[in-house]
Length: 262
Image (tube, rainbow, N blue to C red):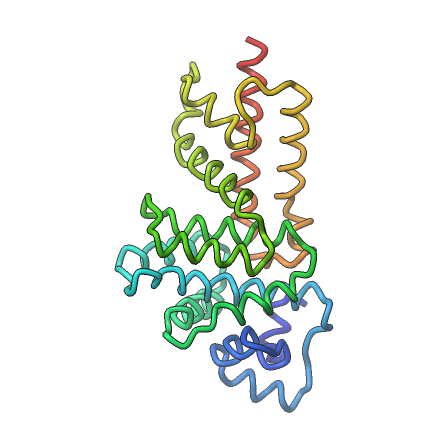
């Protein structure tokens, strides 16, 4: 049974505990009462528990960041809706994500408590935390810019999760390059900017050696491997994000190989 199937059948929102379990239980409503009777849930170290925690933290924190400047604009709501639509959610999962997003916008949302539990649930799974940060960045930059308050919260998240700010900056650079390269790979003759973006997507400077290029490519493909991410706690329905990243990495690598052999 999938993590969502166990959640709906056993009401793990209650049994997850902490602020994440509280939000998830409130969103699911009647499943919480059902859980009290059935006493069903996830093993503390299970993959399904990590997936439930990731799902809950991702969308509630996204809502909190959206309200960083004091209000949530219609554009920010559309951005969130676009992210939801990009994932393979069932209707009830989509509705749960929207409600979690709304909970993150509330004045009493405790970011530090949510992040502390999320870090505990993730353990040492740095690739899972990195995927969490990538999703938050995707939401922040969907309107093309990052505001000062959003930057402050992103750094606050890094500190709470033990994620280096230098790695966040690298993720941002890779995101910019991916956005710019969306149409660039269609060129029969790659432009100078296409090549620069390709190196940036791999986290490299132009002029990197063949060995460095292969090492960066293999490392990034391993980090975004769907099976590995799911086993660490990424919900199956959100794997399209990792798939998109893998495709961008593959295209960047192929472009670099093509231009370095020319």
